[in-house]
Figure 1: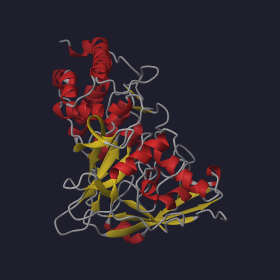
Figure 2 (figure 1 turned 180 degrees about the horizontal axis):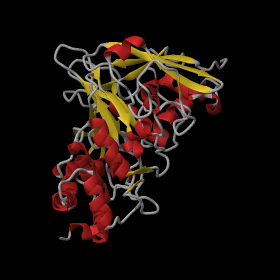
Figure 3 (figure 1 turned 30 degrees about the vertical axis):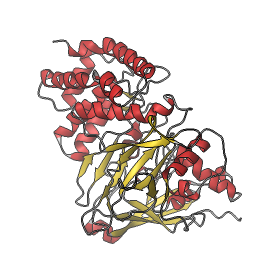
Figure 4 (figure 1 turned 90 degrees about the vertical axis):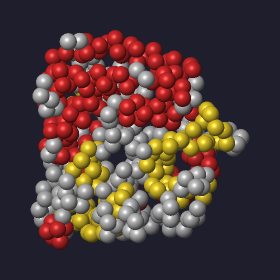
Length: 436
């Protein structure tokens, strides 16, 4: 087919009550991508990105970096890793090379399938509109695993339609009904709820136990007083396609960007990552907890939010979640313009190659000193170091329950032992933070 670049898009927002409003327009020329708010949106609604997008009727040019020449608020609508892989497969099938594709083309392809409240018109002609209403989650997940493992190049259209989310792992945005857990849909159905389902693969660091271990970490975080998404574990097939109950599970996370009131259509909350909000490149260590605590407190206009970020920071430190980059922090905005910290997500055992965190502790990639943590505690609005230490102690106590929680979830003994040893090592490295 003849490739024609997308040069103009309307940006729309779905509100929490299910209604929609046009936010503004994106336009691209040789200089870059411009955005302009719609007058009606300026009168009735609130800024999508208060730090880097002026809330007025000016024509605003996106920076070239770090979001591929898009404004951060719109870059958050694009997938990375897995979602880009699926998208590029479809473009290649249409004889379009990935290096011909612009970020605007990708937004048009995502259309109304992005996480969060924003969607884009007109949708790309490469989007397939015909799809099955209800289909097997086993079939979908099995194909996702086969693609991720390099066993097939074929892509189900349903998998592409469900793939506009971040991260490298194979996953899908689906609607599940617990009455029929083996069936799912791309669009809402009566009695269904929106989930992000994470599939597994032997190619992942923890193999087919990735879902179980993330579930254990979510349980620990909840025990530590941290807000996490609701989740459930789905039976996954073995290599022969038969469901097994113990070792192979897929983790389904209830989406926190959707709202559903009785008798109403599905609504959405605007979702903005720290990467998009602060123009922090998630591909490299570009964020510091000092900046994240400050930005969170300012955006949400709440000292308690700074303390919540501090608690999550301590969890990441002691739980060896070193993949704490800027896309793994996000905020939600309601229709009233108020912001809140999104639930803790993508939290699991993830040591990095150099044993350093993607988000630094006031300049330290690992083993922050007592003085550094005291400084961060002050920035997080704690009245005293003792108050912050109580948060540290509560969080560490929850993490020390990993072995019992993971055993209840049927994580293999070898995996439990591997993680437990690493957690014990990190505790020894940082236990000075608990001393009087």
